Image 1 (spheres, rainbow, N blue to C red):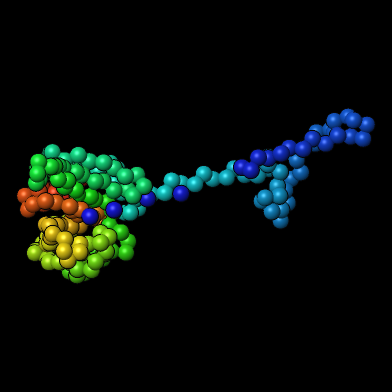
Image 2 (tube, rainbow, N blue to C red):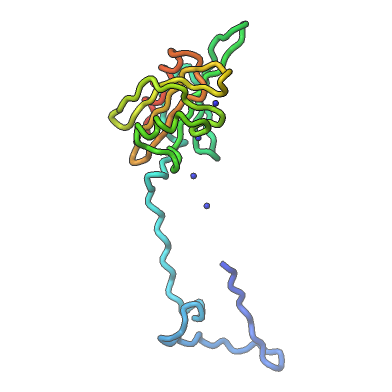
Length: 199
């Protein structure tokens, strides 16, 4: 049709006749001395920043587990999405591709079932150049929802089955959708693949 010292240069002073200046202890910093102006030895050791706790949108998509018999998966590090493909016999002895993708729900996409279903009717909302010409079914799941329908590009293009599923895993909303499926049977396999995704 988917997660951004300065070196400290120690100057050595020399006396007028070329002799090394006597080492002197670092002066004690007064209460009003700015931290950055204190000699290195007099500064208290900076506390190490704590590692940030994982937020909901920091789900490690790369490590998600899937049951996908007959489907081959590829992970895109840039987009943080998985694409699963399966080829099935087509016309004229050709093999036709079927693709299902999943990743974190985009921040600008609605998460409510009815709102998302409405947006699917808009061209380019979910996939560039495509829209859902019909919604067949909207189903609530224990951890999200499922929408099935018919996907179409240009009016002259053949329509095909489509689906999109939203699931919440560990506080993260994960979207799984068809990019192209050639039959209702393959769509059912794609839906089963999406339901199998786990941490």
